Image (cartoon, rainbow, N blue to C red):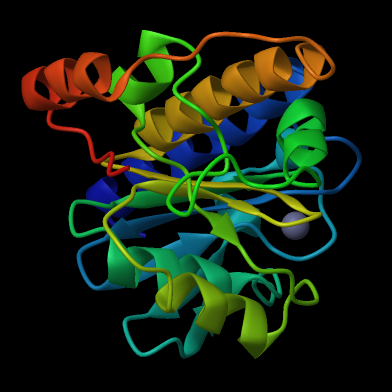
Length: 216
Ligand code: ZN
């Protein structure tokens, strides 16, 4: 590993540890990846994100060939699908965080977002979060369902499964996943209550300012 690759690996491991410290990655669930030059570093299968070290990461080339380290998580195709849809993505974080997973079992708020614009922060920091139709974890179908989503987005909820977020780097991807968890927590706690959401005009004011995607 050269210095640039090692730095990216350390940042990825930090993001994994932080997700566990925040209670967002139960057991050995979740997986994270980062791209550096033409390589992808990814968490291996069956390890807690809290135990990641640069030495235990899987290394793949841009064609998906496994070059070094243990075999990658079976969700590598899912990450690849999100990299394919989010131009600025340098890192992807997938979590089974409790509220995002609960919200992924609810009907989507709209055709383009599983979560409503319940606070400005989801709109400013992530944008719309489409609901990916259910397919088995690790399946080619699940990755295909991400590739086939309409519209522009930086993150998604996988139906009955969890969250998927992209960012420029691991910290940014994790920040997206944290924001989704927070919005999902509100939505879940408001179930059974009438609640207000931002209007289309209020959302547009934020997306114009912050450059995030949200279509009604
Ligand atoms: Zn998963």
